[in-house]
Length: 295
Image: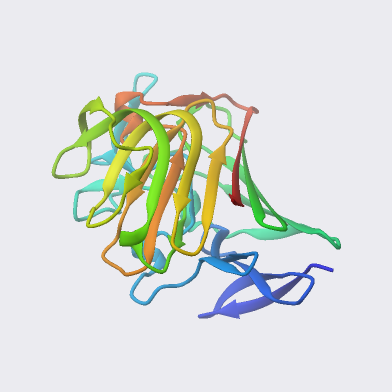
């Protein structure tokens, strides 16, 4: 029987998920945006802490909403009004990764069976400087043998529509990044300036597969389907979404053994350039599922 357990880690509340053999297969940090800080599937450690990587700086496994990646200078215009969000990317002077990543979540449902475990978390957002819109977020994590599903649902609880994109920011642990390959189908590779903001695009090449030997990455793509494969020395996995628009950000941080594979429904600075941008009307909901499975 799968089981869950409450604990703390660095004084922050955590939810542990254990399999039928009582081995730890997941750790969710409830006050760090309900993010998944550890993940093990079929004996493979796919997500785990890395020395030097802090959540406040690198956002491991953060849920990205109501925008992904960067918004230039934290400024945007929506329905004839101008907005200025706080700058939380001081190096490049941008707003970064939305607001859900800092939210505190509560567990409101857990279902443990012989073959699976499902936990549901919820949080409410009342608005912030430059984003005076309210919403609820519900996250549903489901473990089965060799797979994980993360369903994200956002509900506009306010009286005004608001713009959005959404995504997920996991870093995957591998024995040797240089020995890995990625495989995905893309038609555009975005060209970024010195502030990591898009200034154009070019045809995407060498993505299926993409060799990571000696390759430094902080690159964005528009995909032609919603699947990305990671071929690592000790495992292979597939990450898919059911988002109608599929974008991808790849990032190789200056730390050993990890690579970020970020599925997104829109592009960098979407509030200004419209790449994948959607509108959530009052009372409406949007729902997306990220699926991760070993191959």
